[in-house]
Length: 253
Image (cartoon, rainbow, N blue to C red; front, side, top):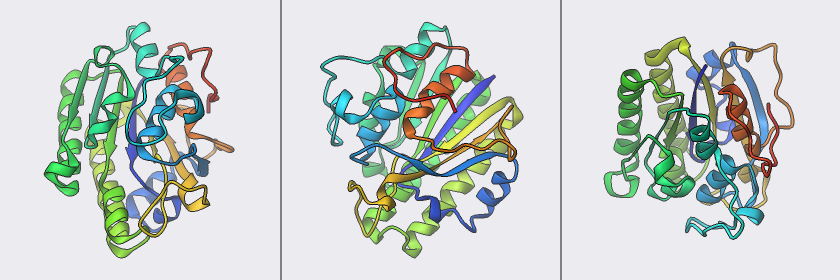
């Protein structure tokens, strides 16, 4: 099995209803529309928690400025390297470089959204991820799409511009999945939601995220309930035959 994790920044679950690509996928996937993220629901803390399966109160990063862990917890990329799995990461928010030490990821590329613009950089991330994965077929790939978060901050969550950015992101998701095919198990999720033009509070709109899994053993007949962003790393590790670290707090979905 090979796994592709696609994260759409700032994607609220209620932004997905009526998105054709999502409606098509949910008919053949396991879907949780009420999963929870960590507090504070901010991009870098959420990603550190996703990959290390511990909350910010343990890893210490509480803003988009990385804080080295006082008591380091090995993350998913480290555990996959120990299991001799190949990995790749494609993203357009430069601060995500700190989700793992550079030496443990086989390939990593960033198109900076604040320099290149959210739309172009998101498109380039999607295109390069397909090209690289087709050529090298890594065991685990992380694809991050920043567009909805940028539009949420600029125009407001659930604005017309924000909803258009979610639809655009899902067209990229469909392109990735159609291009790479059934060889992969796909996990699609978000780091946080948002309200008005912000996020970072304990409001439900900020704290609720979707988790969608399509692949062997995951379909409409298998429910995912009570899920958390902390559960993603243990689930990926289990799928790929790697060992979750003893410090991880999440469960296998």
